[in-house]
Image (cartoon, rainbow, N blue to C red; front, side, top):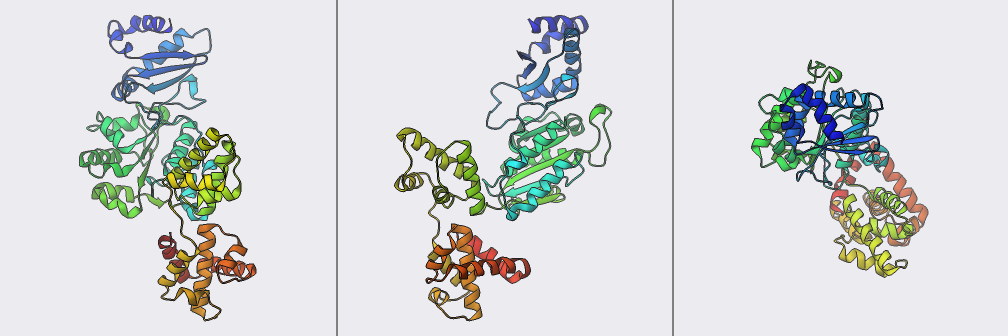
Length: 442
C-alpha cells in the first residue's frame, strides 16, 4: 500500500519516468523503520545522485500528518553477503528521520571490546585519535597492517561505527569488492567523494595481482579532499574525507602492491598490530566464555590460550568446546580438552625446554650452563630472559618456573622477570634480544 501511494505522489511530478526507476526499489516497513532495498550497487549509486531527494520528499508528503519512519538504505540481491556487511546501513539519530549510507551494521564492534596490552597500545591509540577527531583531520590515510587474526577488522569496524554515529556516510568494504563493483566514478572520482565521507577498506592484499583495481584506487585516493574544501552538491557534508585501510601481513608486505599505490598509503600513518600475547588471549577467552556462559576454569582457558596465537582460531576452538559440552551434557575433563585441541588445528606450544634452548642458541651458550648455579653475567642474563619468555608465553606460575629452572625459589623468578621488564625500557640491546627471541621461540 505504501509503495502504491508513493508511486502516485512521484508520478504527479515525474510522469511515466517514475515507473522505470521506482519499480527497482523494494520497500519493507517494520514499525518505525522503512527499509529501502536496491537491486545492486550501481543502482544505489545512481539513486543517491539523482532520485534520493525526490523519493524522500515524497515520503514527507505521505507522512505529513504523522512522524516519518526512520529510513535505512540497503543493497540487496545476490551481491549482498552477511559476513561482509557492504549493505547501505544507517546511523541512529540521523536528521529528518533519513539514514545515510554506510557499510556498518551497527556499533557492536567498539574500541572498548578490543582487548590488548602495551604491545599494541600505539595502533589502538592512533585509531582512537582518528575516531575522536573531525573526519579527515587525523592520520589520513591510515593503514593497519598485521597478520590475520590480530584484530584489524575489529578496529576498522569500530572506526566506521564511530563515524556512522556522527551521521557520516561511510563505505566499509573488502578492497577487491569495492574496486570491482564501483566503476562508475573512475572517470570522475570527485563524484564518489560527494557521496562518501569515509572510505574504510579491508584486505588490501587482495589487490596485489590486480593492477587495474589498484589504478582505480589510486585515482580515487588522488581525488580525496584533504584540504578542507567542500562540495556544493553536498552542502551538509563539506570538508575533508577520511581514508582507512587494512592489509594482512607485516608492513614489509606492502612491497607486493604497485609502487604508486604503496607510496600513497605510506604517505599517511602506517601501524602494525602484533599477535596477541598470552595474557591478552587468556582475557579474550575469559570474555567469550563469560558471554557464552561456559563453565571453564582459568587453567582450562589457559590451556586453550597456549594453543592458538590468533583471535579467530581461539573463537573456533572455544566453539568446539561449547559444542562438545552441549552434546555430552557434562563438564570437560583434561582428556576432553586435549582431544578437542588435537582435532582443532591448534598448534602444540613450546615448553620451557624449547624456549630455553632457543635462548641458549641465540646467545651462543649451552642450556645446561644457563640452568646451572654459575653467576657469570651472560649466564644470569640468559637465565632471566628465559624465565621472562616462559612467563609471557606459557603463563606458568612463579613456583612452576622455579622448578623448571633447576629448583629455584619463586622469589628468584619474580626478581628475574622484574629485572627484564626494567631492561626492556632502558636497554636497547635487551629490547632487540627479547624481540628477536619472541619471534623465534614460538
